[in-house]
Length: 157
Image 1 (tube, one colour):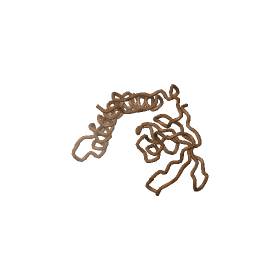
Image 2: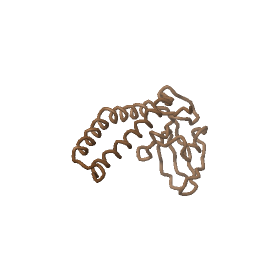
Image 3: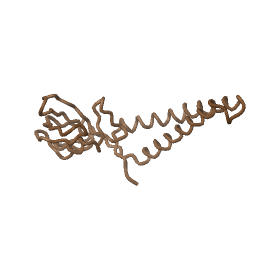
């Protein structure tokens, strides 16, 4: 069984989603199914089929969350240190062409959100950064073309 690395915050977010799906969504969907069933003929009942599909999707996500949480390797980033980039590092980069600065934290795939500066450990940028240090230059083969960055700082916060 392969471990799934994640930060404490990412683990807590998955737990919150799991509890919500089990305690709120599941009973609501069961009530929707019961109400739709009361409308009569199930073969032509769109509400019933929609509720059953919603139940299937919810149960699938619950199973997925339970699996990820059971395989989670929770890493406390605040207890990490060092100069080299690894999981959990918050990295400040400068684009060598535009001088634009970017901040990224390297996190697990489940908690990645580029808009908030969290990139997946398996992303092209993270793979290029792993093992590098402050002051190093990296070239990233991204889907939009190759980009060069200078590593300005590495922190574990």
